[in-house]
Image 1 (cartoon, rainbow, N blue to C red):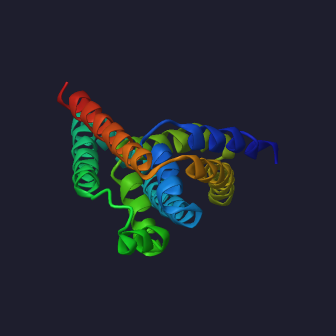
Image 2: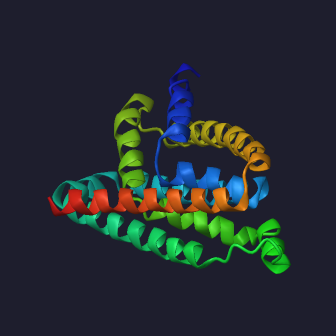
Image 3: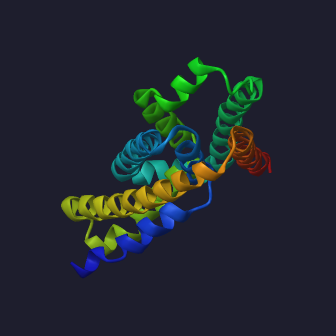
Length: 210
């Protein structure tokens, strides 16, 4: 069992890694509620599963592709992040600050949970850095686990379980802040979060071009 202990701090580190998903989950908890944020997180986990499967079954070929086309991977990920956050920013800015809009309030309090899952999935899947992360995890810990599939799967499950548990705490704490925030502040948080994602995307594009 000692072989799986490193998976716990890795899961904690993954949960507190400052990136698009980190702020999006918190923003969703504040603006749409705990359930919506949890479903966004489920989407993130599903994308992590996809990345892990891709990384595990094609580590050698994928690693060679990353080494040979690192700039292209960064550029593509950056473009997708900028496009995603850019569209979100336009929608947020176009929202009307009308406290009497009951229809808008109803949508806000009863979000489409399938849409939240897709949101989390897409936001994480277009971030190529996450793929690099899982490739690195397998390359480093795989040999220590003797490349045993069942042991590697369990190692992955411990990471994800730790990550998801920590995120539930973050989501709950973020929701407590909602009581102290006005609609304008919540909208500002949305703009800041998506602006941060745009910056992350531009950074990847810049890194790819260099």
